Image (cartoon, rainbow, N blue to C red; front, side, top):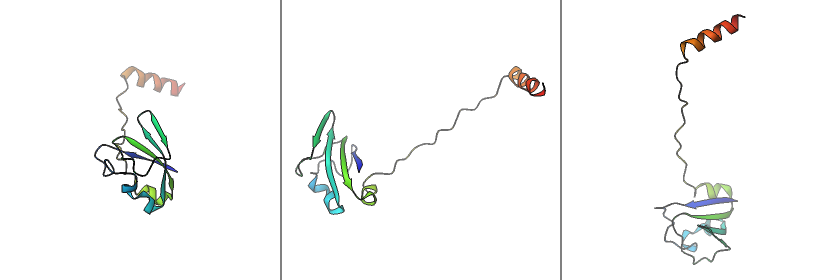
Length: 96
């Protein structure tokens, strides 16, 4: 089971669920989430809109091909210098 998000500009926007041809990949749409609406067992002639989410059941390999790869920027920690007195205090504590 997986959730497929339909972002703005997706090739699925404006297509019906049948038009996405998910069933040809053995993927069944169980639920459509549209804003605050939850539509269980949506009809195949329902047109998809931006920001829809489809809860689907099928082979994981097939669904991975439908989900765009996420591009995340790696967070780099902001490293600064310790104040001079903190470095000296740490050295004194280590000696004691």
